[in-house]
Image (cartoon, rainbow, N blue to C red; front, side, top):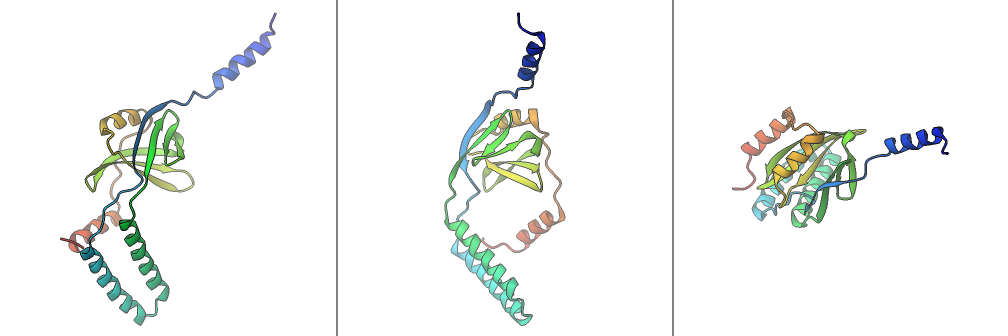
Length: 178
């Protein structure tokens, strides 16, 4: 006859066992937004950087010049290099994208935006530092993803900060291409 104490321990162990991993949605898309920038745009950026660099030479801000030139070079490389295609999964335990796992307890909210004529899923999270996941939907339907995520996270778009509004204003005032 089995010991009731052992039976009780077994049942408590199986009750505390985590639920098996279930993939709720899976799709493949580019790892980042991509837009090939024109020569005209880089010429405009180059002229602006050159003028700013001349001003910075007079006030001897060498480090700032190096940082600005590095950022321009980085944006040039990103605009010329095609992004890799990665797999995104939404599971009952969280989101897996690019081989990294983000559990539901680290994620705060989600919303959708359209950027460069592509639907994008944005998910805010917080671990040691706040972070934001940007997942391109590719061929996946927004409504399907929305139904799944609504079970685990609230759908709310955060208010734009003053830096967001300032960036949009500068973009409207100084268009870099026609």
